[in-house]
Length: 215
Length: 216
Image (cartoon, rainbow over all chains, first blue to last red; front, side):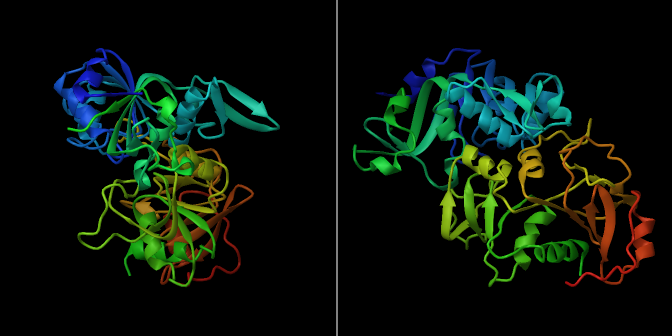
């Protein structure tokens, strides 16, 4: 793990990159990283994020600045800007059931090709997907999701990069920290090694590539 | 009593001590208000919490503790938090005893459509498809009709949420169950006759000899 400034970290992300962004309706989102992505005007991004939050908040800022060309998400209904961009064909949206979304990311981080889920069988979600029968039950084959970068927000990060999360701000952050080539983390507090006890580390340090420094 | 209150009060009667329950947005959210305090039920919020409590008092909200709509909530003693893969493992894995979902249409076989109106409303399904596919019991809480048009339809014209039939539909007029894939009228709302229910029910529905009134 290397501690870097937010400017330096975002400079590594090229235009057109694929990025996973933690958070659920703007809770547990790495806001400082997103602010910097907007400031450096990284365009044509492929984003994997649970939702589009709301304008001005969390991932919503990327839609305010029209930086996203492709979005994989479970729900965008509370962001009218993302909806407008989708209807105007400026933004390609792949809507995925939330449990499937989580498992596709988990599979991507765990070396699996995908998962078999009963969710979506016989619905619009099944279109174009392989169906596989196991012991008499039909499942959809849902393929793994990965990205070049994961932008993760933790509650505590220690000097080595061990992470823990708080309350409902955990959400997709730990599984995204497994599923990208480069993992960049912001934390509410950076603390000495040992403050997060071994039993309370959720994301082990070797998964973290860059920790954003304070101030 | 308004329509939403009738529905929420009746659904609350379905919950049992120790149940792990997930409430959808809209009318389902109101159900928590009518669970007797002595009945210990665990409420799950799919963004990663079991043990959701009421909206915190002014000034006590925590920005990292919200419901699935991003609104501040509280956590009760004994609450637990977890990531989204765990949260949906609970849902899909049959660990959630009851989910209460809103509905746009339910057909005579218990198929639910509640996530999309093509060309009009395409917000995304969020957790609805996993809840409808995986929870042990799926209860739909919705108005019986919208603008005079039945929401209990012969066949769903809107995209399905799941091909798995729901367990129960509770409306402002009736309680309907699906036995062997067939709609059956179990109860009518206070002051509503069977004939009035039938007048706004498009689906074929079995009427037992005795149809009691909802006890709310």
